[in-house]
Image (tube, rainbow, N blue to C red):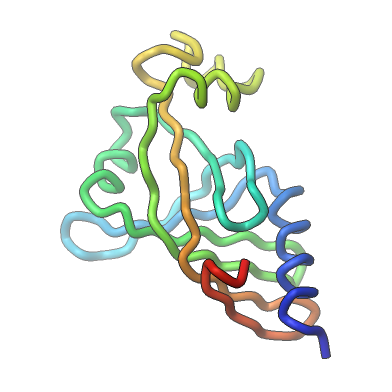
Length: 141
């Protein structure tokens, strides 16, 4: 049986190597909506950065209700994070996270009107890793 810190460390490694994740948010009618979104950067599992278009429906819905969940999967291992998203157009942050593939989606560049960054802050995490279930709150991460 693993201790909580060992499971969290394994989760951090899984998240760090992830290229994408599922983000779930709430629509205006109260129903959930899930979609795949590309990973930009992770600070452990406390703070996750991703991006989308400022005018995207997803962005508008998250601005209305910033409570979201992210899910990562690696084989049978699963990490689900629950928390809040801040939508940022800070130029320093956008330049720092800009990747080559972004130009295909945001032809006006890192500082253009379309490109925004989602800054996700974990409040709670649940894990199923190596056939063990665990959960943690932010202060434990």
